[in-house]
Length: 140
Length: 412
Image (cartoon, rainbow over all chains, first blue to last red; front, side, top):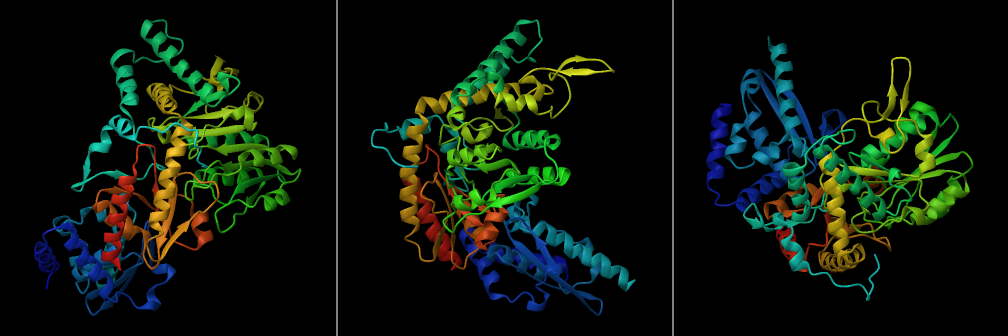
């Protein structure tokens, strides 16, 4: 599936919810259920320090596809991390570089990607793109 | 603060009418504003003063010969006198208008650069806001002075015995907050000041968190410097004051150069203006200063003692209600507290709780509250902080409790 297709899938899923509470319950569920990162990667070098919550990101190349794993210490942040990983992981680096995060607005979670929120998510997306850029250079 | 039975009860419903913002909705719910320690809301009386300034006498102050400039200067200087009277300073020129508490602290820290030398010591408390830590660290780096920390106990109270041990004739300056922003602890500043003075050290008190609840009498306290921000006291942001004893303000060199702060300027030599202008370079926040005066009038019309007594009722009520919750941990259980409750619920991250409360229209603060050393002391990433003002009600606390319980159900 392309990034765009995955984004549409997420948008469709969230369209089923009637109110904010259902959306957040779903996100909390995602945050709770997914083992997002191997403990050995939860290290200082992979840590993105937000003022409010922390995010860990690890990247590795599998052939020509870039795999991401990540985690957060706050469950709602972790839920959004799970969505971002689902969309961006297992893609060719060039696709990741070009992708945008417009779909987060469409599923009503825009406020979590505000730079002023300082929850680590904006830096996380930047970091995903930096990894993609680095590995893209490696693939070329 | 301790309750007093003699204190007049405030009329909250009438007071709430003065704050238009309290009538709005957030995310479809009526706003419950419990982030007062970050900034207080603005009453109509203060907004009116701002509109009046821009509608009727907006002009640059001092040295203008025209009527508007004269009126603006008069109002601005009247505000300074109101502030002087509120804090009971001996002279109006001991009130330096600043952009806020942080500015005031930096002004003093900068001034001490030329007064400290290697081997001198400066003391900070373990429960300071970053704004009362970092300027002093910079000062220590510049001068070679040593920064030492007065520790606190598990209740969030400063350990005065340790303070007495730390202080010596090497100590030149002590800086402590009157009230902790992260914990609500009211520090025994009179005692702290007296101990410092006996050792020959000067004292700066960060009054940002105390000023909305406690009227500081700078002469009675015998404090050397006291700093405040208007926006914590129902005034606008971007304005505050530094109170400094005249002898100290005369000793400190100017902080910033520019217009307003000079007596004469030539390329060979510039002489500085007297107090307070020596520390007030450039066009000040004229409207802000006047509005600060209006905010003090407003708060004094209700009475700080009355405010503190009512807020203490809210604090006691909220504290007992929060204790209904399993896994509740309140940080800061000092005997003397303002209406601030910092808490966590076992196993949950403060960001998650704050996010869900916001979805239900409740404004609290989450995070480290710019006091990372306090969070490190308790070994936590942060807390949820609910802070109350005199326009909050017990009904709002009930709404908050319902929302909190709902949030916990979703998260647990």
